[in-house]
Length: 373
Ligand SMILES: Cc1cc2nc3c(=O)[nH]c(=O)nc-3n(C[C@H](O)[C@H](O)[C@H](O)COP(=O)(O)OP(=O)(O)OC[C@H]3O[C@@H](n4cnc5c(N)ncnc54)[C@H](O)[C@@H]3O)c2cc1C
Ligand code: FES
Image 1 (cartoon, rainbow, N blue to C red):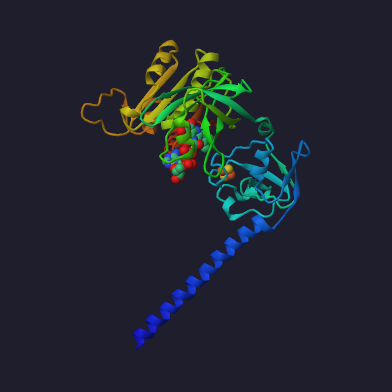
Image 2 (cartoon, rainbow, N blue to C red):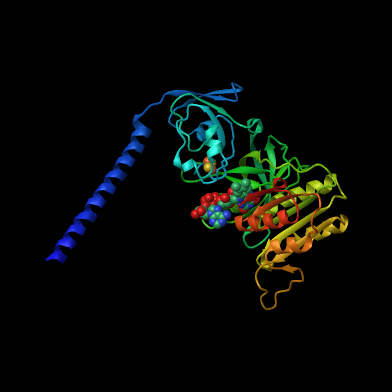
């Protein structure tokens, strides 16, 4: 009898919880629909950088979308999903309280001065914001695929010839955002520029295919002559201009792109500058650009190229270079306490391991820059 009562009680308990959860979900869905179709916020003003740009936009949309619609292209590497933290702006008035979806990327200190993720801020009233001056110069480019070349089984080199505007002023280490079609409308994805800054009429990328990925699939399927739109350039990295500062580039996978840009830009301007390229691959099929870099090293004796394979060699696989994870190669080859600046690009674990090694070698943390992807 007691057992039956316990079972009955737990069934009633589970049913009550389920009904409660269903009610909450229904309420949340109703609020979303009501906000979208019933609430009219009218036209709201967006004041950017103390009146430098004044917009009138329809309320109810995200700040990110309102800015893009008005040709203010702030970085949005995840396409507005709230998962990259790149779309930070400072909201000085309006914008409501910070949302839980923002606190992963906005530190409490930033939040106190009004830093917000533009893709999470809904415009419901007039809003005053501040954005870095550089971003007001970011443009939308129309370009044409000049070539699409297979580099490995999953990476392609895609070169875009610029049409309008027909030149780009980019610094090595910067990236662009490609506009890719999707069933929900156009989305933007970030890709580092691999062509050097002196090549002003092209934007080249190394794109790794993510299975089922919207942006990378779109780019891998492009054919010569296809039209492409992108915004840019973005990115804070500034190459140290003192020729006696050694430059350390460490990359893995499609993290090669900014390295290629940095290296080719440097050897156009400073033929004798000391540069190290460390590139981590799993196995020989992942290797690309090695012959080109070895050729460059023959012309510039202060250029050092180290590729390392992390997987054990398979039977018949030939490799006479370094083996093991790339941070071990960095540790093995670099002398400590040399004046250096480092740029790292690749998966987060690689970046963390390499950063620790570089700091141990005496590079101040402020001189270690990275893009995690
Ligand atoms: C500053 C910056 C620079 C970048 N530069 C480059 C570059 O030079 N070359 C390059 O190839 N990429 C680069 N990326 C990554 C690129 O922006 C896209 O995130 C990537 O191409 C996947 O986009 P997608 O639209 O194909 O996939 P999505 O449609 O966004 O994702 C599809 C699915 O794949 C998953 N996914 C997303 N990304 C990855 C990933 N990297 N590995 C495994 N699964 C994933 C998602 O979680 C999702 O489930 C860069 C990113 C940033 C932030
Ligand atoms: S666009 Fe990625 S977090 Fe806002």
